[in-house]
Length: 208
Image (cartoon, rainbow, N blue to C red; front, side, top):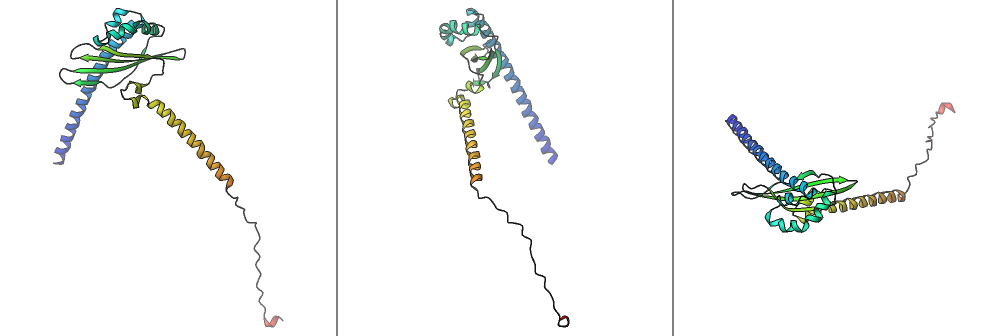
């Protein structure tokens, strides 16, 4: 009986592991497909290739692209090729037809200054990924900034303030300990006095 239960558990774990592996492979394929579009977009922007860049942009973002292309292309053209840094977990909006949303982060450092590009790409059913949002800034790559949650976006700043607060609290604690040690009355060791014992003399009547 015990053997059957163990075999059932092993079989169940094997099924779960196989499913997780297949899901992970599917996610990796989706990320690779999104990266292909993102890198084609960034390369075209750095080359000031308007036609090549807009071909990678979603229909609902092409008006914004038209207004931003000049400045964004000029900014990216002055940097070295951007490198892929991180991909956030894919978001799936429905099961059938499948809709995917991928968030990618690219960055490069030139002469000590960062250029970071955050992209959001969308794919519907069997269509290819297209860029529907992008942001260019000069801050150090921050994975948390890719989140839609303002609390997570501001987490690095919050962590810096917390670290400063902890450091300040530590200094106060050290100062208090030093102050307490100085105010503590000194313990005076008693003088070493040789113990004197009076030897008892036994007198006998016969010794007188």
